[in-house]
Image (cartoon, rainbow, N blue to C red):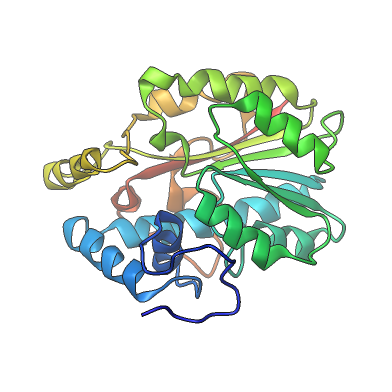
Length: 268
């Protein structure tokens, strides 16, 4: 039975699960339905730490956006954004730097349609349906929506590159984005890894190969290589909870359990 919710755009089938809404559920958002929650519980049963990883990734993104705003960044390009639930990039950026501009990019048309409905009437925000692998299109569409690439921009790639297989050369996509932004710009990456993970977690992760969104676990050296042309800011590439934690959120003694790295680099 369809759930009649005001924020649902026309044409969206709420009786079929959406990856973007499943992610929203793991983050504690309100933009999901029973069918999404059921799928999320099935995924959590196979990979018990996945919810913690997703939430840690989102908390890192919020910390990093506040940091970037503090460094004078007023333009944010969030690629692989999903649904902009409460506490997302535009809310954090606008709170820290009124007048900031945020463009969201996602390949999932369900996420894009929900995003456009949620952001209707929110100034200085925009949404693009595009793939991170098509950097030229992402950049061209973002420019149409008002981003000025002659001025510093923060390119956010939070939890997206691990969905790009090696055969599709994610490094080239990141390099194209990095080449297009002005000096003083920043690159943010968080990425799933097998480093420090027990064998059973890695085996469970392989189940993603049965889906349309297989996750590629990459080691620290591979993730660090994406920052070519950017200088990593302190503390460098670390497990997500270790990246500039807030005083009220002390780092667990096993930060590797989140199974993902995070880093932010500045273009000189």
